[in-house]
Amino acid sequence: MYFSMNYILIMISIMVSIAYYTILERKILGYIQTRKGPNKVGFMGILQPFSDALKLFNKNLLPNENMNLILSYLMPASSLLIMTMLIPLILYNNMSLYDNKHNILL
Image (cartoon, rainbow, N blue to C red; front, side, top):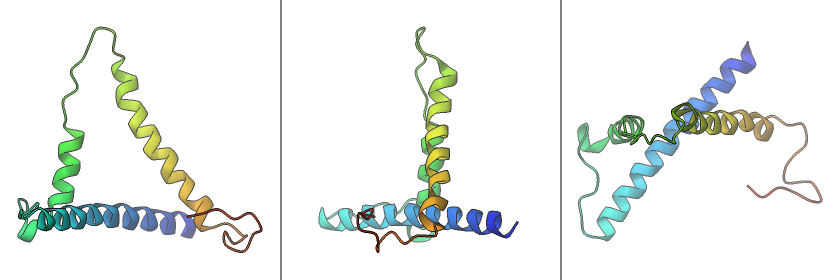
């Protein structure tokens, strides 16, 4: 129970931090290019990552007769699931990633 709650909290915090890192990057690129950057949703654009996520999920796919709709919706969700299931392997392993002879670059 404790592990699953800890895992859920870590996943939520990672996803929210990635969303806000993206908006920070967009704002910095906007200032570099002398634009205002994303400031559309919420106070000073603070809710813009959530608006971008909703827009991404509501994008229209133009169905083709040769297109498999189940696979086109299932594959992005399965790749997200696989990546979220890999996080405990990195965070909760017994051996350190940095002390091995052949270590993994993070």
